[in-house]
Length: 495
Image 1 (cartoon, rainbow, N blue to C red):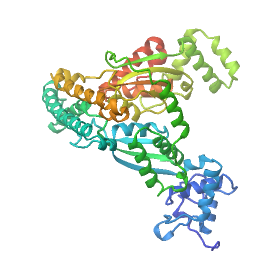
Image 2 (image 1 turned 90 degrees about the vertical axis):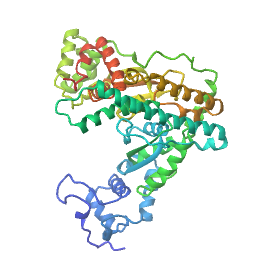
Image 3 (image 1 turned 135 degrees about the vertical axis):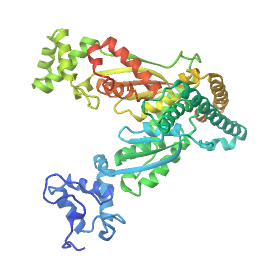
Image 4 (image 1 turned 90 degrees about the horizontal axis):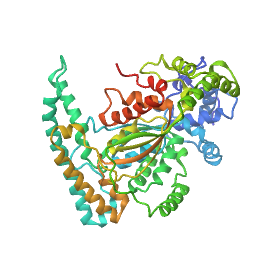
């Protein structure tokens, strides 16, 4: 081992003499090793990197631009000790992987996006892209039931036929109903009309329809994601987890060791399914999608809590003193404090972090199309949600109705519901693949006022899709009625 070898650190760090620098040209797991060593060493990141490189501990090949071709036994043992053996999982957060995932069902993509809130996603959008015939997931379990498989294939073909018919009808209608903007080119106008048609026609596609997404996560979040997928009821998610594990392990191999299903989750699910087996949805469809608050603080209490936390942050008071000071304020004075804290918000700003102390509970009965949008842009909301179902009704896009296409639309919905019932008698988990984007899902949500500001600001803008915009318009209207000053600055993209 050549410890006297001179290492050129400029290949790996952005500077040698400043207090802030970036580390690059190294595999993600190597960076995690460096950060882990620093937590147990008085040396700087650069000093530790130089030492580890000189000792050949990281197996970095300088001729290949700094990329490691293998990992040394010593580095692997370090990770085994601190990450696996001692559960020092924070080390894993310094290793990041970027993964492309293609041709998974919309049903599985939702489970993936819900698996860990620290992951970041960009998903194929059915609002902007036209799906292709035959691009839907076929559950392996159907191979043992050829008659049901044939019906499943037929439904997805019919869904695509209906999608194409709706597209044609919607484009014809929209060209007459949607005015061309001043100076808008033929190409731009056609693209705008097609986008509206895309986002309405997609409601007849099933949750078996394939999607693609890009994903970024750190080692800890990715490991937890794989555990969640392996604990899913979907065989598709189990295979997805193993495929992801194989590819991610090429970048951060040690950090993904011992990934297996979560026995606690499996056991709790089994017990609760047994306990609630006799309870079934009423079968009465809810009239239209809806969004409502099920619990929120009283207005005066909310303002008092906000003022208390602002006094702690900005006046340096103890919690008791801040609370006493806030409780002594009149309603008008508390409202003025809220105005002072929020009035200067611009459309791209996040509000002050003190809004995170105020929590709201909501019930959403929303289309699967809406649900997928909500998942992609959620930041800090927490959800509990029912499985895909046909028992809560479905959404008919307004343009579909206006274009006189409701009969064609509902005919497909009815075909899907008939197959869902038949599949449910055999395997309710597989039946979910035949539920459409139009069908409603039951969701409960807990979010801070900070998160509500993010969602209302983003989802009530003119650019937001009509379905999710309606959801947050409903919530904003209710918030405005109950908490007027706090709701006043939530919409910042308008005007």
